[in-house]
Image 1: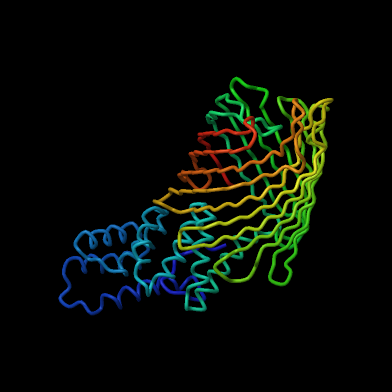
Image 2: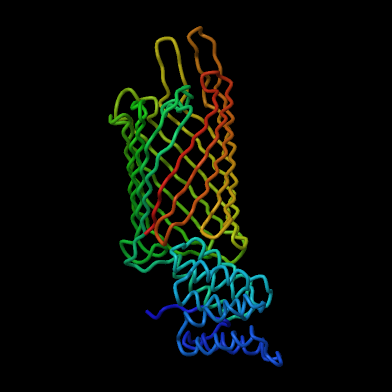
Length: 441
C-alpha cells in the first residue's frame, strides 16, 4: 500500500499531491518583487523539495522562517517536509499553524489526521477526519476524509485490536465489593487489564465478532479485596437504517481473595447512530444473570437490567460525552433470623465527560458523575426498626496522559468519591491516585 502523503489540496491521485503543494506556495509568493534573502531561502527549499532532498528543504524553509518569512505556504511546506522525514511533532506544529488560516483550515485538519495515524493515535485521527468530513466545502477532500474514517472504524475482516494496561496506586478508603460500604482502611495496590476484540466472520460492524477482557487488582496488605475478573463474548453486528446494531452474549466470572466469587451471563443489544451530525449516539440494553459461587455471596445472586444512552460530540481537538444509565436489580438479598438487608437497588446515573488535547502528546480527561440509588425493600435492623437504604454518590475523575510513541502512553489519574447515605455505614468519601502504562495494538 503506498505511503500517505499530506496534500495541499484534495486530488484524485496521491502522486500529484506534492506538485500541488509546490504550486500553491509559488502562487502565494509570486507577487514578491526583488526577493529578499528569506524568499531566496524559500526558493532553495522548493528546489531541494523537487529533488527529493527533504532534509535540505526543511533546513531552507526553517532559515526562511527565522529570516522573517511567515506565510501559510511556508508552514505548509515545512509540515510536509517534516512529515516525509517522520518528524511528526514538528509536522503537527506546522499544520496547526496553518489551521488558523480559514481557507486552509480543513486541509490542515486532514493532514493533522494523517500525522495522528502515523504516530498511532487513532482517536485523534478520527477527530481530525471527522472535522474535515463535516466542515470541508470541497467534495473531494470530504471523500478522502470519509475514506479514512471508514478504514479507522471498520478494520479489515482479519484485523483484531487489543489493549493492555499495568499500574499502581493508592486508595485512602477501600470500598467493600460486596455491600459497597466504605471500610475506613487504606492501601497501595497493583492493577492489570487486557482486552481484545476482533471479527470471526465479516467485519466488526457487519459480521460476527468476539471479545475478551481480564482485569485484576492486588492490594499490598488487605488481600481480602483482591479481585480478578474474566469476561468473554460473541456478537452479531449489522448496519440497519442509519444505525450500526449488534446483539450478543457474554459470560463472566470473578474471584475475590482468590476464592470463587460470582459467575454471570448477559444478553447485550447495542445501537450506534451512523448518520452524519455533530453528535454520535449509542443506545444499549443489557440483561445480566448472576450466580454466587459460594454461599457467602448468596445475597448477590439474581439479575440486573441496564438501559444506557450516550452521546458524544467532537469539537476540533476536544470531545464532550454525556451519559444516562438506568439500573434495576433483583437480587436474593440477605435474611437472618432477626434482620433483613436489601441488595437490590434501582439506580440512575448521570455523567458528563470532557476530553481535550492540551499540548502536543498530552491529553486531559475530566469526568463528573452523579448517581442516585434507592433500594427496593426496607432493611430490618437488629432493634426491629426498618429503614429503606438511600444513597446519592458524587464522583469526579481526572486523567492526564502523555503519548510516548505509536503504541504506549502513560496515564496519571485522580478520582474523588463522596457517597452520601441515610445509613451511616454506607456514608463515606474516597480519594484514589494511580499511574498506569497502557498500550493499544
